[in-house]
Length: 157
Image (cartoon, rainbow, N blue to C red; front, side):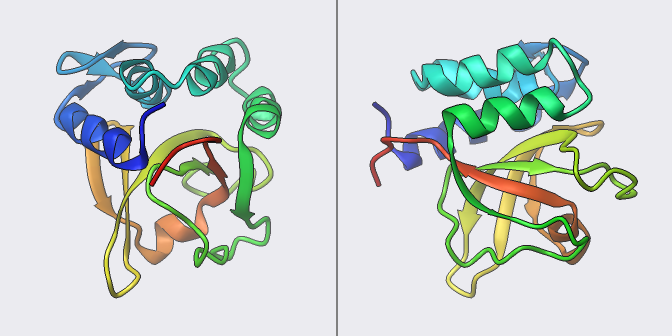
């Protein structure tokens, strides 16, 4: 089983990959689910591969939430349109985001990986957006969009 740093390193290798719906090929094209599926596959984390691959069957967020609940450990979340308490998060945690306008705060619509925690507590996410696979600071607006944070079981470090 890989450790958290292996997953973070693999995620960094995807940065700059352009965004294309339902694609998962490092350096070529990926969407948010394809990015996570590719990272999980390349790091030999089959449980995460299955969660992401099965999500594509119904993209309203309900199936993704059920699959996350079944396969990963819940860390934190918020349904109040306020940022959740992120003090217990760890590198390589999976973040489920609500839509940008928070129209449906109970339905996650987007996925990313927590890939940096600065000493001052500032958090960074890597995810596939319309700009491609990018890494950026979790600003207040992004923190407000967090539906839930999930931990992959049995990871070291």
